[in-house]
Amino acid sequence: MTHVRVSRTRSKTPLAHHHDRALRGELATVKPAIAWETFERERYPEAALELASDLHTRLAIGEYSAVGLFAQITAGLALTGAPLDLIAAATRVASDEIRHAEYCLRMAELCAGTTVELGVDTAAVAASVPAATNLANVDFLMLKYAAVGETLAAALLTECRRRATDHVARALYSSLVSDEVHHARLGWYYFAYRAPLLTLPERQLLTDRIAEFVMELEAEFWIGRDAPESAKNAARALGVLDSPTQQSVLSHVMEGEVVPALDALGLAGSHAWRARRRGQHA
Ligand SMILES: [Fe+2]
Ligand SMILES: [Fe+2]
Image: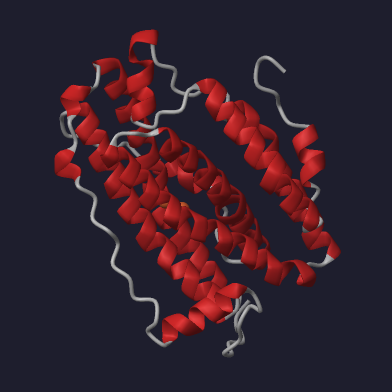
């Protein structure tokens, strides 16, 4: 790949319209501020605060890792000549993710009552992410991290928001969800554009690669953050998901959204999901 042909093409998805509105300056918005200083740590027992701090530290690590990942995906879209509206939407993801990382880190600190430092295993991130220098890898990264990954993130964070009664935690989850929904859409719109162009070998390779990921999801999300009885309500108020809730959110989003979408793209989602590694009591 030494030359890529670039023209003012659009993806023929709703992102194209969104992109043209952005070019006309119609989409400038200011994100509502989160009232961090109003968080009342003393309202919650230590056991709940510990779980919430752990949750937000984990989230912050994921968000931080997503910055580099989406920067690479954006580079891949540009290197492979994707429609301009898709590239433009991808450029916005990394800037959302660094904001999310900072928000989650801030919430982790509020819950911990002290400063928190993230440990990010960059070698592990690099090892699990193939370089977005060819179309096959760009397809895979968009499918795994944008379409499927962001759909899962949006579903889990939506449940956190539904449970949370703490107003700071709720504002944080609302802010994250409103962005993750756009990231997920970018992934699926990319495939609305790409799916008709996939050759049989490309589709087969993508099917195999995403199956590996899909088959591990249930086991990976099986264990949530289970509070002792005395801290259950407080953990819930902070939006912490226990194991049964996490399991049910995952199976709903997989069976209601992800698997049917993969099937519709001819990527054998049902087949992979049926062959999944089970959590314990299946
Ligand atoms: Fe995010
Ligand atoms: Fe995201």
